[in-house]
Length: 316
Image (cartoon, rainbow, N blue to C red; front, side, top):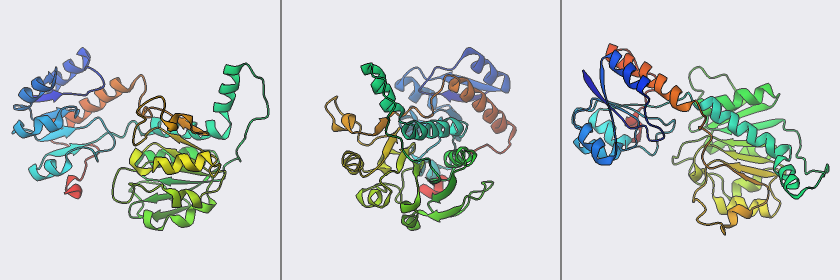
């Protein structure tokens, strides 16, 4: 039996899941806490989840494969995994839900839903709401699994989609957008778009991308939606643009830095909709994660290629 250490973080593995892993020929051990994870990790060949990954790595001499529960891996110790030749795989099954979340936020702002809710709380029946123009053009920054799912939803709405990614190259299997540009050439798009979606990992091109200069090129009726990394947006610049009426609205599922108190000006910024980094969350996610992990373990034990491998050497 080949040991697999489970440390999903957001949920405890079900008995059904543990039984399924045993039936595949694995020996599952659930991390009870950090110390237990470090000890169990010494004999584990596989990690499912990354909750205590950094703490476990120094003593995990038998580790060959890590299946993270995340879609983005920029916060994981990819360099160390590459140095040791440990395979890392990520998840993409949450991409459709993240895309729906982003799409819903954009339409909620366009249809003045936050203002209608506020009027409801105050007991006011007001039909003159601050409608934003019907979107015709959108830019999607980041054209991986999430960005492509956002683009599919936008196309169904009849919205022309322009994509931006790190190198301006179309990912394998992706449908061609109206245009595809590298981040370095994206400024030309900004004055023409109605909706701007961010679904980018943290890298040299994305950190601080949405700053005062970026925002100044957008239409005053444009919307910004970020479901990628909070570091992509200079929060102070965004809040200033919203307070001064230079942007139609913004929705953030990720924020950097996080507001430290109820007095933080972020909470009072007009035309700003916040969700607390929950775009990938839904009630069936634990069960979906378990089924995906079981499929991956079966592939690993049978010597078949794993889904969603990460090129950790690219982080070296």
